[in-house]
Image 1: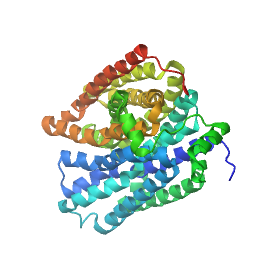
Image 2: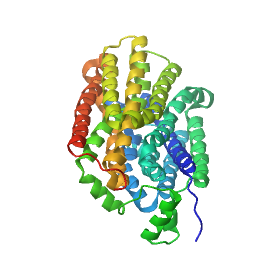
Image 3: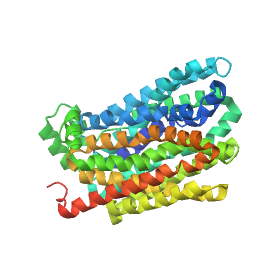
Image 4: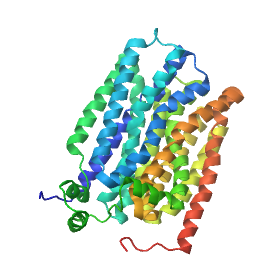
Length: 432
């Protein structure tokens, strides 16, 4: 039997790298969708659907792949999703080289939508990493560890939103897609060599029985262990009503983050009449602010508790959404965008501080449901915002943010229900 060391830092670095690479895979698709709209003459609603295509697969696949971690650890699910993203990005690269712009027609919409969905598989790495990192760290450190994992991984869309205008200017659309494909391939290779499972899964892979693997992994320092296979943990998590409450809240915070990362370039160019480079910078500012506040939010949630951090974050998010509906000039819109990012980032960290705490019996399954259906907001919300534009004209770009105000209010109510349930039924110490 091969001796296995306990190295949470490597587990965290590997998981963060996998998520960063997977999320970067779709950072090009949403902002470049405007180019497709110009050639294909798409309506605002169809543009919103196209922008959100990667989030459809990226959210729904989080459910089975997040639960799969409880059976096999995170390494295999990470690699499968990253390879699927490579296939999708390769297809998009070929499509852009061969069809854009003269050969692109409205009849290609379905194929383009499919390739966008396939490239979005990388987004699903998020729920894989939640279970993966949770198994590496004790509960007292999970808020910070998960905040670092998700926060730094979430930097990808902001960073690439910043780089996109420059790559478009230097290499054009086709050259940019080729550069993204190369990055995705190199990043997947790096994860292959760095990523590793928590000790329990490594011992199980060596053929040890569950009891022996658990004992050896516990002796090595691991505290959290799976309690069933993927199907069982999904079913167990589904029976806990808090899974669905946290899913709805995550739909607001992270689904909203995904939606705005894709929608903001259109908002800044179409409503505020800013050039593409400036729109890219402001979108990057939003995404990076949200991602870095998630890192700090994890430590904040460890200190004051996930419930209180969640309540404060949703109030902040509601304020930012209200200001976005009122903003007509760039100055107020930028300030409101930052407030929204702060609220969403801390909220994202608080939700996944609560997942291993509230659904301890099925962390992987709960991460799949919460991360998957919650991220579905990234697909559902851009078309809704497109409907506001269709109904109200240019003013709909601002009025559409009222959706986030309503979502923040509803999520605040759900968060209070979760907190009250803890008072009625206090949690036992972890491990009991």
